[in-house]
Length: 174
Image (cartoon, rainbow, N blue to C red; front, side):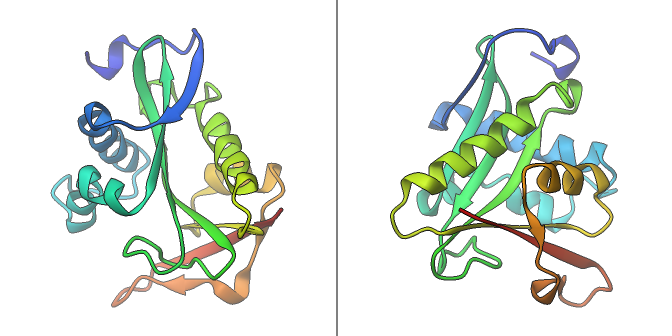
């Protein structure tokens, strides 16, 4: 099924990812980053990295958004010390790669995934904060996080190594 055939209507289910979801998660992640203009080259090293869903799932939780039986989005949850953690401190649940298929963006799937991340963090006894990194110029993503109470933790902002690209950190205290 191509993304052009997806419709924003229907029942949305947030659930843990399965191995059958991996190709969909990989495609949606790459499509989302390319569609948003974050990368120009589909063969970029980072886009190759995000497609290694099975490897990522060994060390992290992955949730998917499914509408009418079709995976339309995903998010990865990581704990401090994981190979996939960029900024997680003790007591934090970091989420990464929150993506929604470009064909159905702005349909509520991103907000639903974010809500599921917060709910999952509240289930974990040793977690008091949810953290994330996003692009400094990713206005829509930043607006979503701020609308749900996340605060820019500017002291934790960082640069992608060997670049002038700043990534901003947001946190939500539970």
